[in-house]
Amino acid sequence: MRDLAEREGGCCSFFTFTVTPDEGLIGLDIAVDQEHAAVLDALAARTAAAGGRR
Image (cartoon, rainbow, N blue to C red):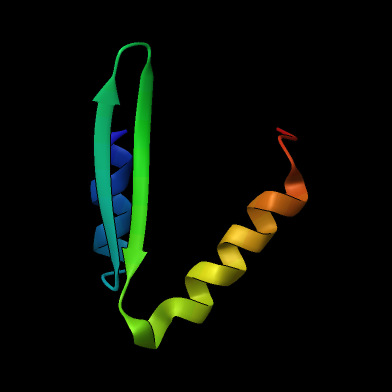
């Protein structure tokens, strides 16, 4: 997960990724500055619409 977050950060430098390991889980927080909030909101909407489909 950390490798993926690092590669994505290199691709889209306006994202800030924070990987947080927990017992049996890995958390991934994604943040952007206010200027790019619409991009993050659109990605969140697409994720919600996919609803767990893989």
